[in-house]
Amino acid sequence: MIWRRLLLAIPDLELAPSYVFDRVGRLARAFDAHVDLFHCLYEPSFAPQSGAHDQAAQRIADHVQERRRRLERLADILRDQGVAVSASVRWDYPVYEAVIRQALRYKADVLIAPALSPQEPARTVVYREQRLIEQAPCAVLLLRTQEVYARGGVVAEVDPPHAHDGNVDLDEIVIGAAKTLAGALGDVPVHLHHAAPLGGEGAGAHTLAVISEQRVRRLAELHSVGAADACVEYGEPSTTLPTYVRSARAQTLVIGVGSHARRPAVLGARLAESIECDLLVVKSRYEHPAVGSQPSPAVLPQPL
Image (tube, rainbow, N blue to C red):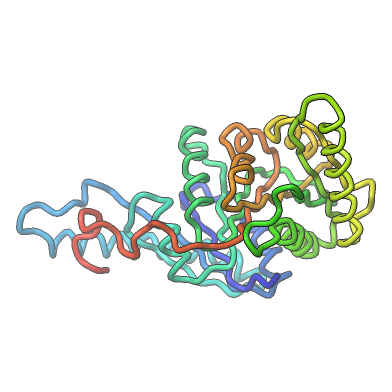
């Protein structure tokens, strides 16, 4: 995989943690990538009164420029690391739609979003993450934690029974993304994990278990992953996967989303809240998002 355009969405300019810039800078240098820092803002009090559209537009433009100056100071943190950076500010709402619109404009390969926001309820952050995963026209990397193990590996969550989405093998995409990310992080190990559903008792369930384990071992062999780093567990992903991620001391979990039913299920709110490492979500296909290219006229009185 080749990731040359990274979009970093900064929701709060005052609470942009340093570890985010350290991690993004590390990835950008490894990929020789360009980074676009993006911030959106919207304040209902700026809505124009009757006959005052021009005044409102000028106030918005001034506000946007002030935020852009502050964003440029954050961009300098990455420039000091030798990273090529641009800074973009838009008057837009809601946040997740604004970010998706910017990803389309910028033609991002990866959308990076800090998932920690002390100013917002966890429910709001999870909702925004889910919308970004559903609608983003590119891979989504959620920076979920400040603590990262120095040599922690990357876990690829595979699902061989449901890997084929049309003509696309989603497991191959997931493993490819995991290996690309592991290389950027300093050739850290890649782990394969499969959360297999409990199939009950009897010969049929035993046969399915054997087939699942064989397929995961085969994937490990094909991608030069050690046998000790390939694991099949039986149970719900929301239970088995967070435990495995902790035991593997993972830096990042990579999950694939396809069009069939099981793949999106692993991205439920319960799982999203329990993962204690960064989360990279890739898809079998990136369809055009159900988000308009322009903000609502109620948000933007006239083009800025």
